[in-house]
Image (cartoon, rainbow, N blue to C red; front, side):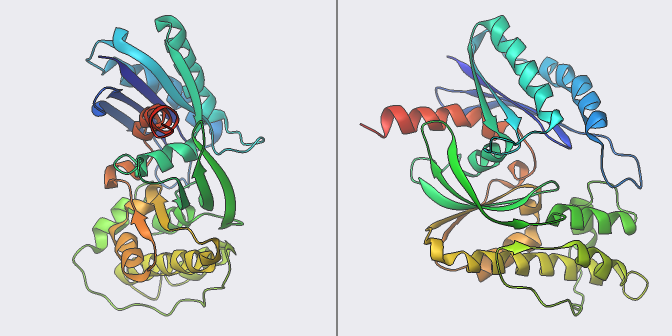
Length: 315
């Protein structure tokens, strides 16, 4: 019996996961959201790095299984699969993982944070999906990616994205204006749960796959003194879902048959349901709700997916 350890140190969450590589059982899944002071819109990289340095030993110590059975350490060392892709927060997890792999004399693999999200969406489907359109919507990223399986991880090409703030940032910035804790999405969703309110008029959605959202922050912000929080949140979630659907439709010429939607915003039930009702012609895959947000489970599964693709499928 051997284990795979996954480590992810993203902009707002420290994550560690342990998987039994013989039966894919998740043995440990430890996460800690980074602390953001009330009223702040986020964290500077140096603040996030400091918290990761503090959190990683604490989470690692929570693993109760025999760590000598760890055969592979898998980490996210960069945001995405591009040569100049870099964020200081990921170096913390990378270096922590290298120390563990050296100490245990085991394999060490580096992937991107985006591959981690893709993998977490494919845990139950990796044997049947090779090429797909991946939508990565989170606090730090809004990207539409044409992807296919490769020898290691996934080959990805950005085919759409926001050119300013992300959908996650839009939600958080407006949530802070309404005095919700950061990150705000889950608190805003809970606030409107079970409430039926009217939908407000929102700006026309511009067609295309490269979009701007900063004007929407001002638009919805100007509604705060005119409408209830319920009305603004509901209209905001609908607007975001409509925009995502529009971009997906604009990329239909790529002729992908599978659509993967991941990232923290993908855990929003209102946005999930809207996409499921509005998108036709794709097999739509969402990760489990708890694996939509930042996690290390996807990283721990990536070596398993690679091995199956390279050693089993090819025969």
